[in-house]
Image (cartoon, rainbow, N blue to C red; front, side, top):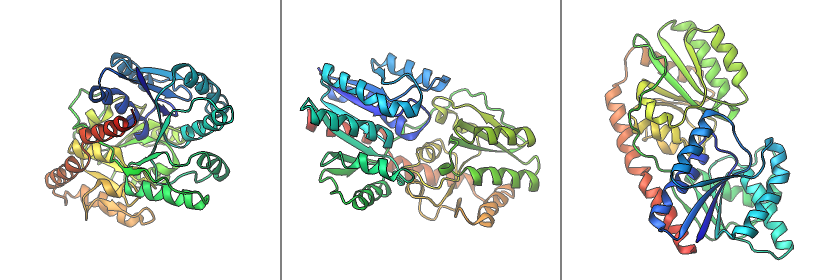
Length: 374
């Protein structure tokens, strides 16, 4: 039995983690009975979202391995030890790493295995972001220098460019075996939801991690501005978790036009409840929320940002520059005044993403990649 490990930081709300879950869940159907998928997380996330995803994976016979049952930072030191034990015991044929922290843990693991001349699996890396190691340059160099000519997949042209720039910065050669595989999404269904939407208001949703690169400052300032200038006309539904949670909770107590929710599994199946999705990101690897929203026929208000630009049609009218508040607020004004043909926007975006971000194309592309290695 050939084993393939999908290595992630943790089961949590995020595009990279969702891709890994989908590969573990669906690629086995194309590769046959001789291949087994395991999802390996560095540390656990103990919330409803993670528990639901683990149950889903278990129902599809995908085992979840947690390398360290403790805090994230400590996992970076101790996870390689446990990963080495699993590799030597189970001899996985492929380890597929997603994002920077798994890349770091795997790089330490590879160095130790090389030193002791132990078994090393084939390595696949997927580059999910357009900003790589932006605040931990030394850690980035330690990580990247462990990799030579492994298979590198990028989720967008911007992500592939970021990988090339990073290797150049560290004076390392880029892999000769690299390709772009766009993240694919299923067309969302229309599941029951518990969102407190108001039919008398315009319902705007933000869904994702509450981190600076997701545009938290823009989100907070926009909610303040819209609430002041268009009282009781818009209702913001903020879904997720992260370091800005406390700030958003305080804001939700002060403003009536905002509701805060914890991360929700398979939330894209509930996007139909909203009128618009708001994405003020600084950068994305590939904006999966944008793709899912368009497939759910919910127009996206999006910043001009690497990795997000590729998810929307050219000349999309709901796009704005992050440093141009007037441009952003003008979009909300036009929404308030019903100046956009929402039905046209829905169909235009749906048609665009349906062709470009096919879920089945993604699964087939990765399955073919694994087939060549088995």
